[in-house]
Amino acid sequence: MKTMGNQNDRFGCVYSVAEIRAIETGALSMQLDQANPGTKSLMQKAGLAAANLAIELVGNLPAKILVLAGPGNNGGDAFEVAAILASRGHAVHVVQCGNAVDYSSDALSSLRKAQSYHVQLIDAVALASLPSDWALIIDGLFGIGLKRAPEGAIAGLIRHINQLAAQNAIPLLALDVPSGLSAETGQLAGTDGIAICATHTISFIGDKPGLHTGQGQDYAGQVSVESLGIPSSLFPPAKAHLNTAESLKGILQPRKQNSHKGSYGDVIIIGGASGMVGAAILAARAAQFSGAGRIYCCIPGVGPQYDSLHPEIMFRVPEEMDFEDHHVVIGPGLGTSAAVQALLIGAIKSAKTLVVDADALNLIAADPALAQLLASRTAASVLTPHPLEAARLLQQGVAEVQADRLFAARKLAQQLNAVVVLKGSGSIICKANGDVSINTTGNPALASGGTGDVLAGVTGALLAQGCSAAEAARIAAWAHGYAADELVEQGTGPIGLTASELLPLIRKNLNWLTKG
View 1 (cartoon, rainbow, N blue to C red):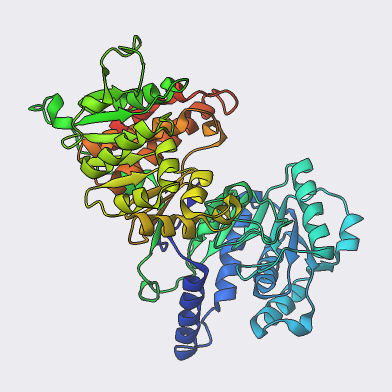
View 2 (cartoon, rainbow, N blue to C red):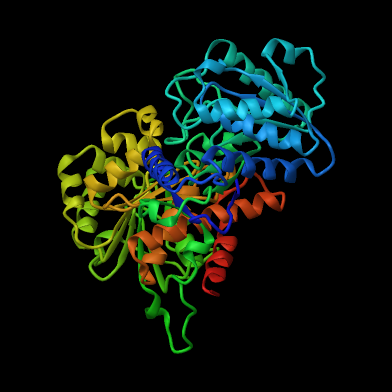
């Protein structure tokens, strides 16, 4: 999914529903204070912005456009769009799903404007009898305030529209948020929810987290943001941002000529129990491709003496390593024996920086004393759980974690005093103070064994090169996901892409970030 903006956007800033409502309230109060006959309402501005985007999608020639108008202000936005498109010569039909007596004054005004331009008002029953040759469908059923799943006739309409758009390759533009999707969490409302599956979403006032994480990426399509001309002074400092290439430029600096392998840190990878040695080797190779000066692969028990594909990696017995001056990645294929638990305790106590992944996370989840030991660390720590591992750490179900991924990541980061990368669609990178970044790269090609081990190795290498915990996590998540995006674009995947294939492209992405 791609996010677009305009010059008035706070590009990369993401706002909660409560923050959006507060901004809107402030803007409406300012509008009342400064009212004059030529001032456009927020609804009129939203309608104009959406109409302009709609025309970009269908072109300037007259087109047949279907608009869905719900019962609230989102329906008012829909009528405003319909009126503008009709005034520009397009044939517009509106499925009216609300009762006019329940509309706000602004929404009612927009409805009357649409009627004055001879927009065809129809119901869902009439829609079924019309030809399906729409050039564009616009969803204005529900906005950010939806609390429950669409049901009854509205749910049936959404199913019909999704099927109609998919079968006929009709672009589907959602106003503010696809109807049925939570703007806050990126999940469908209700246990058996349904939502509009948009190809494009225009987000009003500010960007919303639910468009970028959880199920949001499957429903929002390409996101653009329209701030409606609201002054910057009404926007609070953002507590969440999109993790984009633009936001990462300048963190990694070009390497100086006068440098050596010691300049870029030593990374110790601890993992690879019997049957899972490949996990540790993948993490070690990822650290090598990501620029660490020296990599030690420490496998508990019996393991290989070297990596024939990458002999640069050194193999050691983990019990003989001094963690104090090293950057430690622990967990890939680690197992959960008492011996490896002792290694984890040593790493938590003394590692210069620490990346905790996979089985190391499970050990911490099972032992409150280990969790407290981790939380007491003063040096940098990064945790990289997938949703099940996060659920174990939080002692709750996976569904509860996924129901509000930002909340889960914030809770975990605060409890364990670490930067947390909650993996998944729209990975959440969260600092202990609650500041969040939502990763914008990655695709289903990463849903295969070993890709998490690669992410852990990349993160450890970036810590070794001097990045802060948050910087390392953000850069690693972006470069890892973008490597998968590039491979899919080239025709490799998403089916069957392997973790090893990511490594050369991750290296390329990290070098690209140093170029400013």
